[in-house]
Length: 425
Image (cartoon, rainbow, N blue to C red; front, side):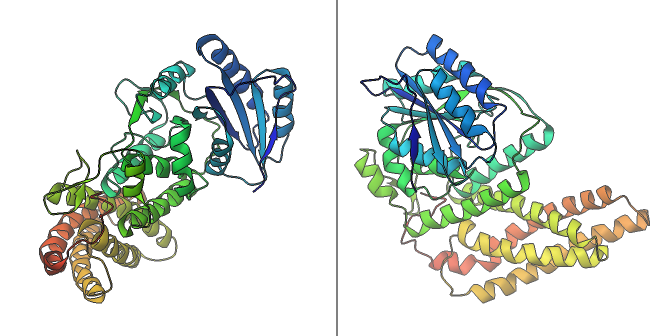
């Protein structure tokens, strides 16, 4: 990909800036001007070292690029980069890879995060105390104004990350981060995602490489005009989690080599011989966390499938089909991620036993549904779904006990890890 850099005519810098703040944009002609002027004024007033603002226009089809060029002509220390393809991760990866600054940062163009957090964000990086810094909406001391739907989604995503990838940072998706340039140059070639999962992937790699991640509580106000497709983004994030977990588990990501190159201590052997990071629960607590995270994803998928199937079929049939599809995926995910069973040996038997467990879950959910219809012949759709969710959660608890004590019991005894489990590394 060709990186097109358009520098300001006033750019007479003879030395590289200490800080490069990237603002990735796509079709933001209205917000870009106020954002950059406000950011420039803040940096001039509050940041005591040389800086640059880089507007990364990725494939805008409106007047965003023209606005960016005018800003570069008007303001010193403002540059413009134009990329022909969309993707926030793509824009950040390209600009950061070519920047000559010592500290690389980025923020969203809507400035939902209060700029007062910018200096606390970059100061630990400049001082050498930390390698990566993130603004966190979930850290103690943060003040956040947002709708309940996005709040629930954020917290569920956080639980999934902790359960499946053993992440210890509190929040991944806030558009307010900084990183040491030398660290970025080592990590960026390993980051595959070019969209919204870029942040999560970068942070997980940084954490697994032994890097210090500094969290800054932020004041954040939700942008009601945000054009982020929540469903598409959530789907892409779940796919990214699965891909990253597999890469960490099969050793295709050179985490141990990175730790050695960066001078970090090696991963210590845990009680069972598998590698663990300090602070990550092992044994039953880890299994419960992982199983719970997979259960959250399965329940959300189950509800979505049920609601979709209910449009064209009866309640019992919709319940059966939705439960069958999610049960197969749930068994496969728990087989690998929760109980650490790999390879094709026994896979068919595990799925068959999983279907037996499905029958128990079906009895619980169908029984709850039948009981509801005995109480009222035409329950509201929301009440129907609510009863099924509660019954499904109960079935999930029963499922964990049966999977652990029956389905995967023998395989867990025979299984000896040859690589670090993504949940234990």
